[in-house]
Amino acid sequence: MRLTDSQYERIAPLLPTPRGKLTVPQRQVMDALFYIAKEGCSWRGLPPEFGPWHTIYMRLNRWAKAGVLERVVTELQRDQLAGLELDALSLDSTIIKLHADGAGALRKRGARRSAARGAA
Image 1 (cartoon, rainbow, N blue to C red):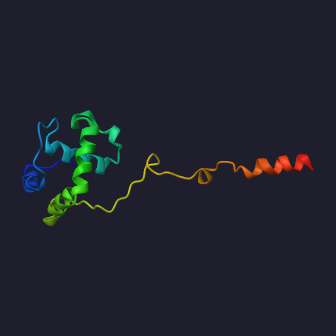
Image 2 (spheres, rainbow, N blue to C red):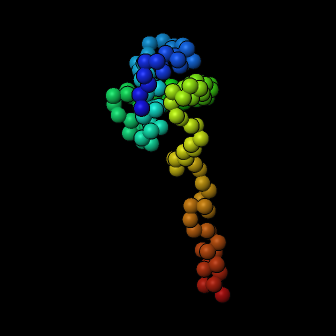
Image 3 (cartoon, rainbow, N blue to C red):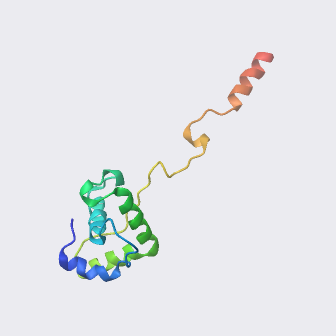
């Protein structure tokens, strides 16, 4: 899904004022967001036509923390310009820390019992 001119004109005032020189235009960042939402690809899997994935990720991350993305989607849904829902949760194993016991690591107790049996 790509934003039409009328859709972008509606959400443009909701986007933050760019700081400095933009390497990736705001509209292209929004198109990248909708592409990822539709295709379900990883950030690194984003086609090069959208620009550097890390630049897009960082900008969208800032916008999400500032509540910009929620306002944009709400505006697009107001007149049913876009059928989007922000109810998805994505967990990546690279950000979830697990204790060693939960990862199936052997416990140290087993080695002590073997040593105690050998001594008896």
